[in-house]
Image (tube, rainbow, N blue to C red; front, side, top):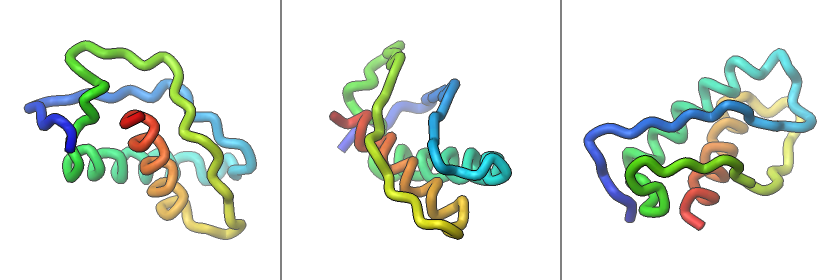
Length: 88
């Protein structure tokens, strides 16, 4: 279980996704934000992200994409991949 600070800020400058339709980007970004926020609230902030910690690059691995899948579902998978990578 992670830490539970009063406030926490994550900034994702660039999220590289190959094979995703650019038209889905806004909804996908919102879904990643919502799901990652929920994971951090439910599971806590990974201890590897101590005070003033910065991660320059994070590899969330490969995610298999299914055509026609709604951005919210893909956003949840991306958020989980990011959260798991932060816990490594």
